[in-house]
Length: 88
Image (cartoon, rainbow, N blue to C red):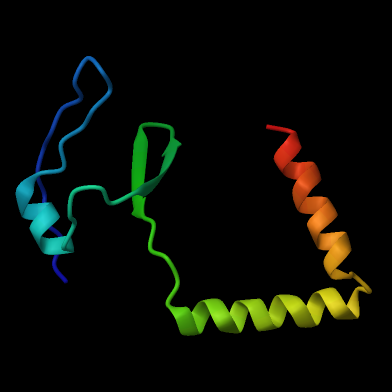
């Protein structure tokens, strides 16, 4: 895929418009979410894409295997999740 070069500017509210040619090329639709990385004078936007159901199930299977090997129970996991959620 060839890179397209465009310019844009930031609004007073910090909003940046992604030029139409780039949105079209990347298939970006309204509501898409990004991870934003800033370093020096560089800003990188990375589209957040959820895993497919197969990828999710494979990751879950792997996590269950690791948790079992570490001796964790469902109760341990539930307790940890509750603790983390209460910190917010």
